Image 1 (cartoon, one colour):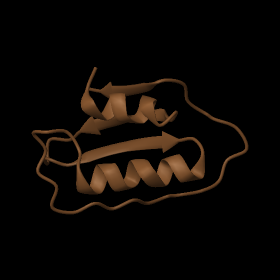
Image 2: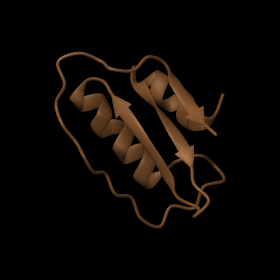
Image 3: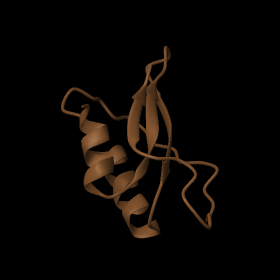
Amino acid sequence: MTYTEKEGLRLGLVGWVKNTYKGTVVGQVQGPADMVEEMKVWLSKEGSPTSRITRASFTNQRSIDKLELSGFKTRF
């Protein structure tokens, strides 16, 4: 299990992340708004021990009535 998966599950979130060939990370996170905000802070300030974070951008944010995903996974 990756650090990001552990953090997402610890916060009670569902979603996925994927490292791209450009050296960036893309993904989707769903759950309680306050926990999503906490995950965004973690992703932009801390991340996994080997990550080097120079910039974080979060787009396409919206409220949903029910979760559309289950679990928290790393895609390859």
